[in-house]
Image (cartoon, rainbow over all chains, first blue to last red):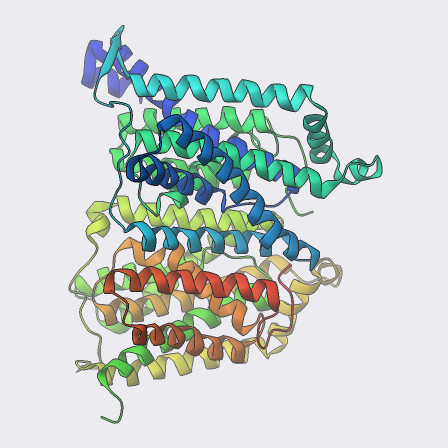
Length: 307
Length: 291
């Protein structure tokens, strides 16, 4: 494939590859924000919270509503959005998942319920805001900074820096705080964790709060970078989920790495395929990883196979 | 005619969805295959049949090839996901429907991508062309009756008992020397075949298809039908199809603007799905839980 690019594009190859990798990092950082929250929730609860995608979209629309329509200052909007996202996630856990779990519902039931939640709120958003795309436009997108043949907009640099800061904070939290250690304990061995007195429901509450707050941050960045539309949640969720599966769904740092890899694979892939294939690349990677490497490249070796 | 044109339309949809729901129940309810990719078979059937008919193939050939083509994918899906457990199997089959969706969207030379395929011809059987919706209603009724009858005979046969045994305790069945993989792929291929047939009926009735008809919204609809009706109950799926297709039609009485009618209906389906899972996860006539 590399040879093909070289023959068709000659000397520009390196710059083009570099640009694709940079674009991949930026796309990847949004996927990674979605994936990290998702896999934080997965690792402590052990079920697939597919409705995580709607937390991202709801946050995006919250920014549009509070900042663009109501006129609340941008930074205040961001704080409100992240707090409301966290509460929204907790509400999903407490009002839907926990009652289902108490009735002994299987993981598949929880997964189907979460697809139902995702669909429900996507349609509610469409009823409330209409199907047309919405623009927030707080930071000018058009201005680009070119360095060594690679162009980045100010917004893209901001996205990359903010997500890196958040990943470092998240890592510190998981490693250094007592709550973070308890969460890792539950994710490693929930039975043992409950024997030593860790309250599983409290840990689940916290994982939904933090995971959904991360979705809120992702939603803010998505609202700044892309046009908002009600049904973007499904796609974002699949991408975040794919990133998580590639890196290791039950291991947060793995899912972050996986998401960056996915972003780069998509952007390098469309050098040789038509740009419409971006989603097809991601979906195929998801399917192949689920089949052949369901623990991902960095995930813990737990039995994902039925033996 | 005794019934109005609008009711004819609803009845046609009901018969198409009965085939789709009963075929999903065959895999999900009777055999315990956690297949969230059933919409993909529906879509594969619809596209195959539409494209072949446009190429001039007789309808009978188009619909049978559509079913067979879908069942080939059914075999491959079971083969690929056989060793995955519970929710991973569900996610992988869901992933399969995403792959099919994005291929329908991107293989533009074949599927025309997002533009969809217009002008799908109405079926013509043994020289008789179906022109009116009343005729189409009789036609789908007949196909539905035959399909449901075949699946009904299948689940009530000794083979059907083996399928249920595989769902309830696959290990014991293997101890008895049964090839559970063969059971699973036979059930999935039959399920996919009839999903393909219903896709064909759908495509030739609406006469226009595009990839969005075979995605999450549609998946929610058939999952809702099968779970509301109850797993491992053909009667349940039939009753639930009628209820689930009919109930949202009452929304028309609220005289909502046309732009919100679609989303309101979708939100209602999703709400019914969550509610039934929380209140009565076995559905109306269900015999087993979703494990």
